Amino acid sequence: MNLKKGLFERRPEPFRVLHQEEGAAQELSVHLSSMLPTYYRTRPIVFVCIGTDRSTGDSLGPLVGTLIEEQDIKPFHVYGTLDDPIHAVNLEEKLKEISSKHINPFIIGVDACLGRLKSVGAIQLSEGPLRPGAGVNKELPEVGEIHLTGIVNVSGFMEFFVLQNTRLNLVMKMAKTIAEAIVLAGHSVERRNAVSIEKWREEMQQ
Image (cartoon, rainbow, N blue to C red):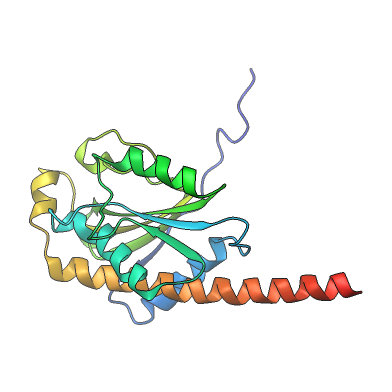
């Protein structure tokens, strides 16, 4: 019997941190930066922040996108903001646009999700693509090679209604923590890139 390679391999457990923990953004940034490519000039790093400001719980993605776009972090390209959100209706079109603008991009999906009561307020960083819409029974394209999700409310019953009635205060605090982590990771990637270029120049001169 020919088994596909990796059939029984398990992905590493996602990194998880509560948004209100002291040092949450710093800890998240360390894990995130370790997963990002150093040479962002040859492999663009693209954040795709999914959601809509028409639903409080689902506004996490565009809030994060807006916060990091305002910082203008050099290594990163950002899609999905409050001004120009990426949601179920335009996701496929936006992914095609990203593919046409960037060669071999390294994509990070960012989205809100629902989970257990004790996990509400947690931010997760996971390997593999984001599956947007799964919590509300929608089939949408997978997004990214890694993804960030924020658990904004409890799953299991009337998910659409639950998202609509999530507290904006919680979502905003989580968005700020995620955005701060992304900004810190951007600075880390820039430093790594500068060191790598300097080493390359030294090797060329030898």
